[in-house]
Length: 57
Image (cartoon, rainbow, N blue to C red; front, side, top):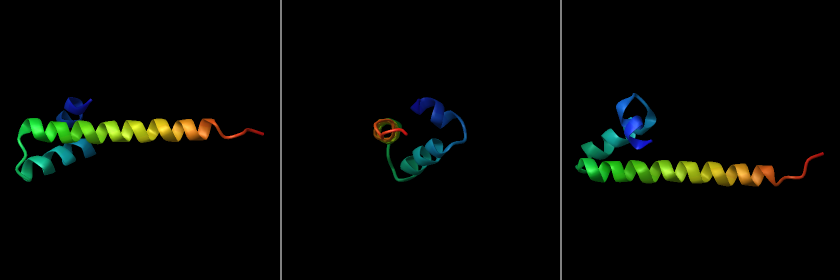
C-alpha cells in the first residue's frame, strides 16, 4: 500500500516527500508512511464499528 502511494501522485506521496526533505532516509520515510496509513485504516475500522452498532429504526 505504501509503495503504491509513493509511485502515484497522492497525499501519501506528498507525505513521503516531506519526510525525505526533512532528512529521513528512504526506509525511515517509508516507515512513517506505513504508520500513517495504518492509523487511517484503524480509524476507518473503528468508525465503521461504531456506526454499525447504532440501533436502526
